[in-house]
Amino acid sequence: MIQRLLLLLFLIVFAVSETADAAVKTIVLDGSTTVGPVAKSFAIYFTKKYGVRVTVSESGSGNGAKSLINSSCTIATMSRAMKEAEIAAARKKGVNPVAHVIAFDGLAMVIHPANPVRSLSISQIRSIYQGTIRNWKEVGGANARIVVIQRESNSGTQESFKELVTGKRMRITGNSETQSSNGAVKNRVSTTLSSIGFLSLGFVDSSVKVIAVNGVVPNEKTVKNGAYKVTRPLYLYTNGQPSGLVKQFIDLPNTPEGKGMITELGLVSR
Image 1: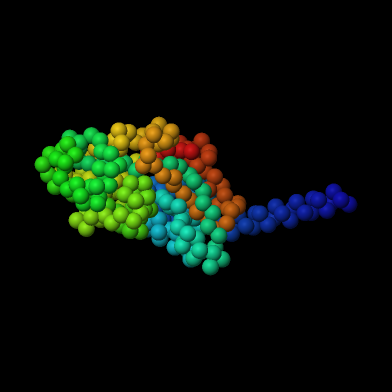
Image 2: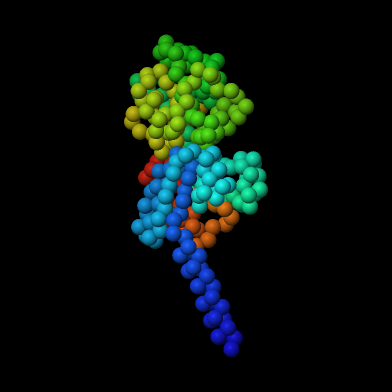
């Protein structure tokens, strides 16, 4: 009798689990342009393996948080941690944001390849973005006005840069230019001889020159061991602890396949 009851209980639990997974027809991700390439790579792999459609939008970390709060996405992709105000807004709507660190990223300071400058201190970068250092000759470069490139206010990369380099309360010079994505920053710097910008290590290529910060160049080793100080975690956020297929997606960064995709895209696996 007891064995029959246990078998019946197992079948009920299994059926509920199968029903819950069947209900997940589409996993929707929205948020960071930095996390976007990893999310898309995961999506292709996951759809092929499990037959579940996964969509990825890149509207910025702030909008990713809003999507999770408004229950318009399954997973928010973010290149910064959710703010206290965002968590409070989520809880008011019955949403419980749970953070999952999937990788680490070095924020690379980039300049035009023809610029002779090789290294800047955090203090010098802060002064450039504050507008008190305005010419490259003040930091060992040519006699040319520095074109300062930043990201839009909704960007997690912008938030991370302010937290790690300038300080959250420092006002960035009004002469700076704002770009909407890592790719746009890279394009602007690669075509502007006297520019400086910052972007995810995963977007760096030969079109821009990465400079050392406090004498340390960002790479897998220096990001992982903490020698490169302008480093941040990258996140996936769910509403509560994930289960079923969503949990399997969230767990991808812990698998050999997931780690391989992260490394291939220039980021640093956990």
